[in-house]
Amino acid sequence: MAKKVSENFLDYVPAHIELKRFSWQTQENGLVCFAIEHQNVYDKIAQKLFHTPRVTHVDLDEYGSFLWKHIDGQTSVKALAHAFREEYGEAVEPLYDRIVKYMAILHNNGFIRYVGKEK
Image (cartoon, rainbow, N blue to C red; front, side, top):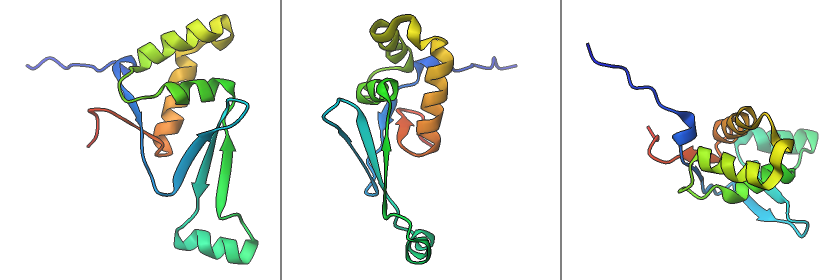
């Protein structure tokens, strides 16, 4: 019987995904702002009927901005967590729960991928 190998999420290496509808920039205050363009048919209908914006801007907080800037496609989640704790100390506890949730949100929304884990 083959032994089942379990993967450790902390060993995953996140990388930004380059999308035409998505961009980000660092603002003057050092925080990151996402700009997400709504381009599909349903978005266009909503823009006409309900006057919804063509572009949504999402401002990250200090913690989210720190992590986003450190995602480089070479640094593991474990190393990101270590740098996060070094920068903010006890204020970021529970550290691993926070990191895992943040990475899951970014991944589920299509902003990051995990290097070597693509299907």
